[in-house]
Image (cartoon, rainbow, N blue to C red; front, top):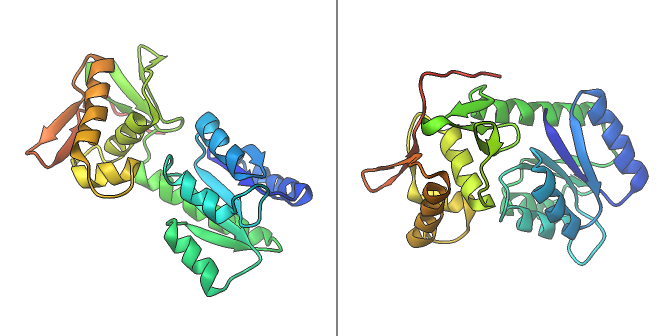
Length: 229
C-alpha cells in the first residue's frame, strides 16, 4: 500500500488532508509537525511520499527538512505551500521535489498529484513487489527490506538504498557514480561505496552483486521466479 507521511503543523489541516488520502485507499503512516520528527518517521516507516508543509514547527523550515530527507531517502516529496513564487520553485528544484500543492487544499489537485506519483513509482518498479535474488534472498519493494527464509536480513540504510536501486534496475547495471549519489552527496568516493558493498556481501555470506567491467554493479537475479504485484 502507498505510504504517505504528512508534515503539517496545523492539526485541522493535517486531519483534513489525511481524510482525503485515506478515502482513496492510501496509507497515512504518520503526521508530524517538525523536522526532527520527520527523520524519525522516515527511519521507522519508510514512506513512499512526504507531503511537506513549508512552515512547520522547530528550528528548520520544511525546505530545510526536505534537504535532510534527501540524505537518507529517495521517497517522493511534495511541498504544501501558500506561495507559488520563484523562490518556492527554487526550493523545489534544490531538493529535487516532485511538485507542490497550493493552500487552501483542492481535493482534486491532491488526488491527481498523488495518483500520478504513485503510478510513476509503480512503473519504476516494473510492477514487481518482490525481486528474487541468487542464494534464496529476495527484496521486498513494498517495505524496502531484504529477506532470506522469510527473515529480515539486517543491513544498514545505505546498503538497503543500494540494493533497492539495483533491484529496481535489475535488468542492467548501475554505474558507481549513480549508486553513490543515490545514497550520499558530492563527488564519487569509490572506497566508501565499496565498503558498503563489502558489508552486504559479508552479512549475506553470498555475493549478490556483480562488478560489471569496473564501471558499476548489477544485482544477481534468480530468473526461475517471477513475482508481480
